[in-house]
Length: 335
Image (tube, rainbow, N blue to C red; front, side, top):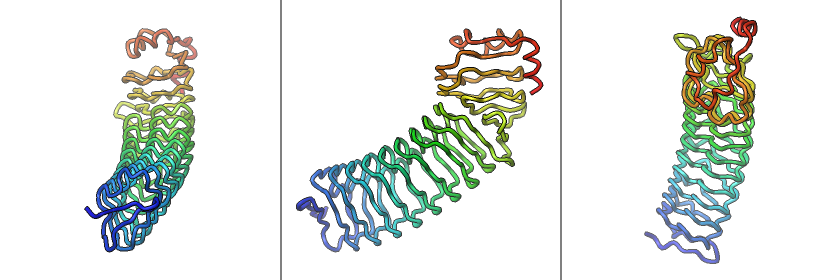
């Protein structure tokens, strides 16, 4: 490995280098700034990992690739500008950069890998360029300061845990380009109040929006072939051979009579849910449907159906079951 040095806090890269080699400055807590020469085309894995005193980085237009963990754990790094030459940002490149408040991702970037901004708690906003087609696993997980996110029309897949624990995000609009939303993609986004699902979305995996207690508005665009537009019930309903499956509910969901099944974790972590009325059409309630609904105090069921639903709900919820009078049950069936 080349002889990389730090002098008076400044990192020195040997002349003529085309790469900053793996672990070149790893763990150098005395490093505060670095100017990368124009000859460098690649920053290899863990090149600056754990440089907790690093404040300033200038990346030249010659760099095309930043490999995994390159700046991981650089907790003092507040901002960084990536040049238009960069095409690929590797896994966990900025993971744990808790001081990072803003970053500009150029349109030259076609992909960034898993956990790229994982745990960047100081990041408040980020613009994802139109060149990116996937938001991969845990890309923004734990970005607790992120208040908004705009997903461009180029994105086709949002992978699992992509925005998990982004507790300050209020609204999410899924663009028409997206077809798949991965498991726990927006899990535990405790400040999330509304989501809009485009007509192109063909798969929303389990717990994609689980643990979002403030969620009160769920909208599906007309024309979606799998999910039913549901402005009137604030729920995500999936078409099924026997009716509809309620995949996702929220604190003010009204279950329509077309629903035959309440899916896995449908109301998971919905701490704002206080009561719910289950219509006579519901024949199956899958596991963990009401897990974490700590404020739930009443489950209304049709007249003479308490025993029927006790067989479908876990024992700890049996005491919450209340039968509606016959006339109320009939009105539920008509809705």
